Length: 81
Image (cartoon, rainbow, N blue to C red; front, side, top):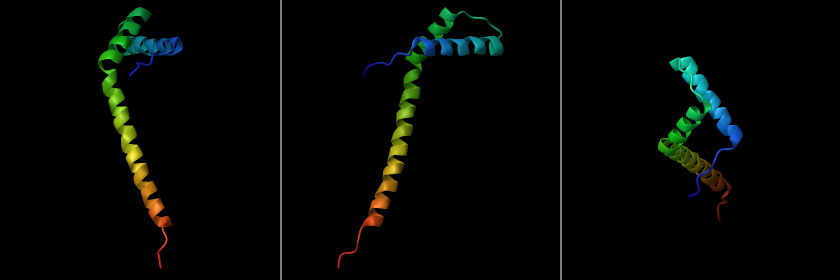
């Protein structure tokens, strides 16, 4: 499967949030390079867990909606005489 890359703007926004978190929560200032390096590391090492959870959530919702659709189709059935 092809790994999707983030746009420059998306990476910049993520790096800004990481830098803000480090500043506010850890009282440490880090540069953009360090923030982007951390984002890449987390995406590679932890990202698959979030991705797989998203797939599982999507499949659960799909299964639920298919059950609803099955019920609605059954409601359309007509009695044979």
